[in-house]
Length: 315
Figure (cartoon, one colour):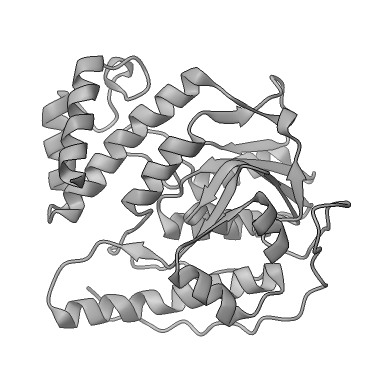
């Protein structure tokens, strides 16, 4: 791997006082500065397996209650980064295209994501912060890991009372000797610092406190997120619903992603893990046909067998 290049963190200017209560109007804020995105992407950043599990258990299938949405709404109800298994995923390229289509108008971003590729999340954050009009972010179920960084791009952030924001340090899977691990740690340090700076600027909390919450992999409920400045107001319960069909699809797709990550943790490369899962699924290509796609009417017995294999790895 190429030697890391240190990226100095920009100073964090002061911001107006944050609301200390869940009562009152939403406060509009200046969006923080851009975050560095690595040019060398040979190191991949993921959401840890427990985060994927919690998203599947607590947030799968949560969607906006309204059947109709405005043409200035961007939805992020998927993994962050391109999803190799479904051909979906939320990417900076897709978000940039949606913003171009919306034009010079305010934007609403609806999020329910367990995260994914942290570096792609940083790129999406940068795309959103460049938009000329105010951005309202609504956390429908969960904004974890990379999705939490995207959330910080909002001028205002609304969150469900039973929803969560989770922040942590950039999380990767690495292999090698102690020198390799030291190099990876040095490579990741400026990105962790940049994320702590973004959280601190958005919340008016000390950067050291934000870094400590990242170290602890901190989950914040709606009221706690508001108290700490990560959000500004609560979403009313009638703005959200659980779509059972979407819930089943979310969970099935998530099981395949979790199995891939488990195999990578066991020492396989991503290519090896995907080949092993494809051999179990009988998928002819990287983007499977609808009949084989998790959540799109796949074989229930195969899905059950894969879930059992995943449970065995976890234990």
